Image 1 (tube, one colour):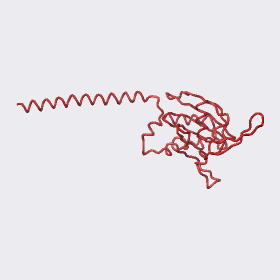
Image 2 (cartoon, one colour):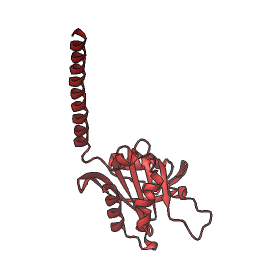
Image 3 (cartoon, one colour):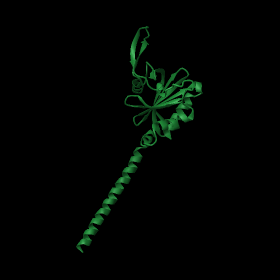
Image 4 (cartoon, one colour):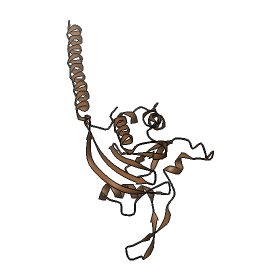
Length: 211
């Protein structure tokens, strides 16, 4: 009789413990899902180890033919760590990274009085400065190319998500730089000679982030 009571005691203890743990896990799951509303979808793609960033950019952006290249940079240093680009048929030695990165280099700046000075460009820093200060007097530099800063729209709402979006331009092209959260910055390039429209490009980028 004693052993039966002991078994029933441990069984009931285990049963109530299981109910408590089960409810705690379920509650934590739904609480986490609730708190994740509005978080950039890049967060979820980051959890999919079998789905590389390169595939992500290829499938969601380059395949639309509305962008010529796309890259992901870190919010810590602004440096691009993954990129894709449409091959240059006229250049067999084309390297996609040449569009997104170049080691520090010097440029010559001329002030309003005609005085010239030399400034060292760290490309990732020009992106971070733009987001932090809201302007870029010396332009945004990427792959050794200067882009003119056009405007910045902070907190742009798009179907339940919020993004900081900067628009930059160069001759016959330009780019959008989008801070998407989760430590990521999305950079999307367009080429007007390939009939890629700046307005359509930003819509494709935002739609990609939403889907």
